[in-house]
Length: 91
Image (cartoon, rainbow, N blue to C red; front, side):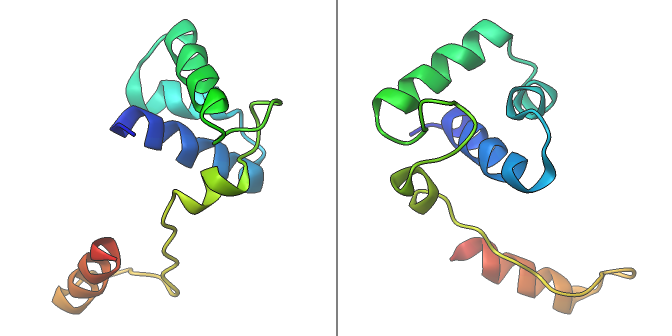
């Protein structure tokens, strides 16, 4: 799976919480056309990662993503915050 596929899966996952259009999220992140995004989504659907509605992930699609939650607000970021975020990214 390439970075565009992961971006699409992440956008679909996020859109289930924000109610935003996942295609618009991907367009804003990648500047790809609707046609390319829809072709990529069709490929993800064929691989069993995206549901037929193109708006939700299958269990396989969901488990292919790593989601890290960081509590609190980082008003003033310091080295401890950077360490925590890098450790979460490494998971």
